[in-house]
Length: 455
Image (cartoon, rainbow, N blue to C red; front, side):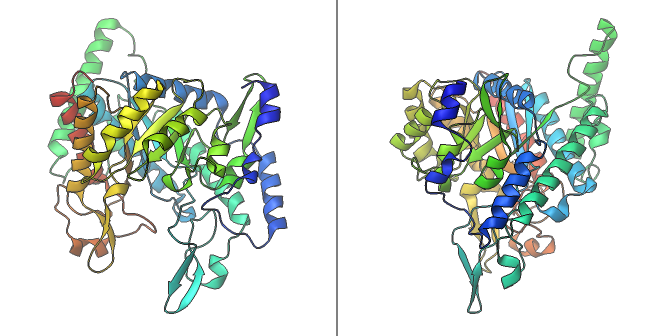
């Protein structure tokens, strides 16, 4: 984008002329404006060169030369911005990527749903309990979860607190990485509680031993360290839902002649906010970041092609990631049409499977959960469909945690509906626990080795 076009055709607040779905209604408009102005003067959370580096990695994945592992909380909370929680998230991403690297024999790019995943879309603006109606909880960036009138009023000060928590999180992540935490020579740094009692522990330890032996051998015969084994970059991602927050940290860089949303490396648009004439598409079309679009059963061929035309008019490699979430029962019915539609555009895209959101259900007691078998089934079907269509699945998008939660049923330990109450901590959607997430990683690795060597 040239400076002239950037100045005349788009700017970070141009979305305000469009209909903005899923936005909170702030009663104190003046306070909101002050917060946005304050945030616009604060240092960015990420840098443009980090953003461009991720775009290059996504372009590699589009060509089948890398695989994207995107995972983390459904919705982060301010209370969980602790060193223990952050380390646990890094450990599970690193362990999963190690297993996938071993199985797929290609680089795995780690993208955390972290450092900004503080806002969530809701199916209704109002929540009613026992005859009382209050604004829905939209995440810690907007309001507070307790069901009281004071807590549910959107509070602009939370935007600044979200910025601070995101910056603290990513600063700690960078410090860990620079300090050698992600060194492939020391995977013991990543051990979580499951290693030692999990049914998969022996298999995991064999993978670690094999990689360690291979590194030792290569470095012995070469006399020097193997490139890119002593650190692993972790990129940040979140749904670019709260447009005032995204706008305030969007900067024009003269040396690059482009606008960057510097709240995160990789923002994505959800299905609920992907209207062609909506505010989110307007905002996203102007930023240089690699961006994602969630696509589900409601997505049509024409709609998807229009989104691609507007959001990647120059067919730029690494720009677009399509994250499909159809559900285990529907993926084979809907995905082929989407792949066909994209091929007609000629645009390079990265296909990523989100097997979580399309498989959400409620127990007879009203507890939201996801069945591990359905999650795995959608992944398997996605690999098959892409192969049959001459495409390839280049990534996976998972809601997971390093904690020993019981929010999704099934998996190696056979969790049932009765186990959900034992350790259900999510305030929004159910997540895979560390053991279930590792099982998914091992299954993906196995799928790739046995069925998708040519992908």
